[in-house]
Length: 128
Image (cartoon, rainbow, N blue to C red; front, side, top):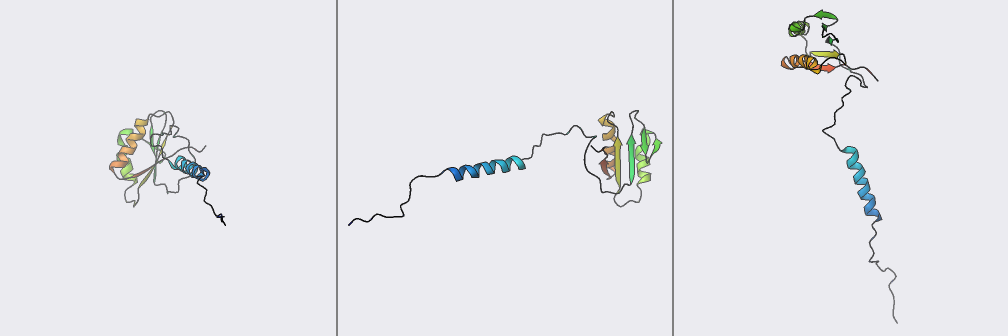
């Protein structure tokens, strides 16, 4: 009398579950990958709101005229005016408003002044 086993293990290997896992990992890495070389060149437009309180605003118009809190000043004396306006502040913050046509070096000049004096700079943009 020959008895056959009912629970015979099949030597075939199913790849369907393995491909599901591979595709899930692929999707995960594609969604979480950070592209460090990506630049958003349309900085004057952005979504979102700033929750910081405004201490001082610096505006630069297309004629390269500087304004500190809507008061026109000479660009050579901007650092002195910022120091006067931000004296005694515990977290000095500058809101920088520059028109789209203003060269980036003008905005970087204000950012450099803020960096030297340990001021925080927020670049103001218009909403979409």
